[in-house]
Amino acid sequence: MAEAKDARLALYELYLATTEKVSDRRAQANAWMLSVNSAVVALYGYLAADKLSVSVGQKQIWLWAIVSVAWAFLLTSYRQLNRAKLEVLQEMEKELTFPVFTRECKAYQRHRRRSLSIVETLLPICFLALYVAIMAAALWMKG
Image (cartoon, rainbow, N blue to C red; front, side, top):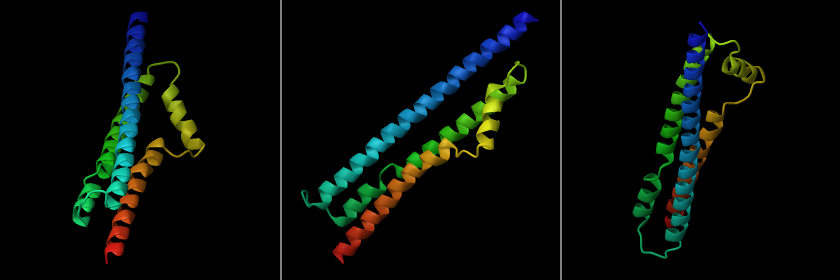
């Protein structure tokens, strides 16, 4: 009986470690996407200053080719993966003496906290809005 409990606990700990790795990769992806989007804004500023002869159409392609939409999809994918992992951890906790993640989720909901996933999704939306504003300004200044 003790061996089965130890095996379940070991499996739980292993699965918890994989969940933490997913969260780490998610944070790294966010940092990378933020860097890329910041570089694009800087590139647009450089191009808009007519340092290079690039047409307005090409500038718009640069803006739309950027990763904001892909970033939002990536975040959605990580959110779904984390949600699935949390469900598995909560299922595994039913056989343990103290269900830490189940209790944490209930406390989080009780305090009406916003999910970090929702908050981090605002970043690519803000960049997308910035790109739209930049394109509108470029078109307005041209016309």
